[in-house]
Length: 346
Image 1 (cartoon, rainbow, N blue to C red):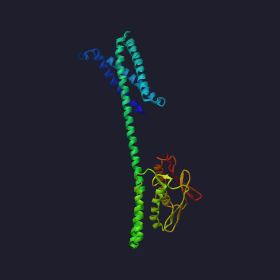
Image 2: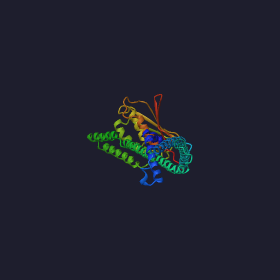
Image 3: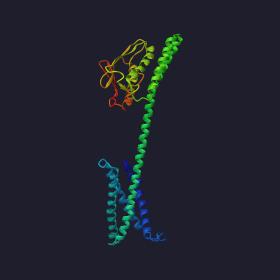
Image 4: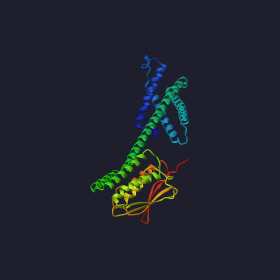
């Protein structure tokens, strides 16, 4: 709550006391010369003014708390400020008049205090304005600090996301296995296959870097990238990783976020059993909203990645462009991963 500092015990005890001293010194300066202040100092007057400040400050605190609780009813800032100061003015007039009447009638025994009352109005209205200006300044600083903290949190999440995207784009395990494959081919003196492997690796990363500034790309561009990825991976899997594209829509017309299809394949590949002795067939279809990956479940006992974390990463990428989310389901031993298409407005 913005009024948290107003409710602090130390503030409620010492602020009225300090304000009372300030008001009394100001009144003495108005009515007396500076050299006569000490001679005209009256402790009972000081105590009275401090009590008035305690009453006013507590009433101001309750008034501000009520304004904040009803802020959903007051949408405009200047209207809220106007109501705040108007209420403060009425509170000051009413309470100062009451306190002055009680003080002069029952303590001093006088009925006429008009001139003193006007001076008190002026002084305490200034005190009320300063009190509320202090509240507004603290509220403004609180909002600024909140915005800075929110900005820092957004920057932290963006950095975390960018690092995650970078990790997915430049997968160190994939790069390491690819280089191991190239070394293996060179040792076998299979120069032609080694050159083909190097070309596929270079073209794959060239397409990755080519899309690094693109917010969305066509599925055709993503498929060309995936072809090079499969050529590299199938050297390790002896051709046992296969994709069966059964798309009803032209791949040039389907728009996606870069690397989301690649990450979906990576998710399937690392959660399902596929190697030189085990085949993994993935059927890829599309409907109006999604690209669907269907395959028979052969889940690994130990998974290399957390599928939920990778799915969350995909959804984070997609959330800027679509209200739909990527999903994973398994029914009757048939698994399905769905990646939303991106719909462009004319």
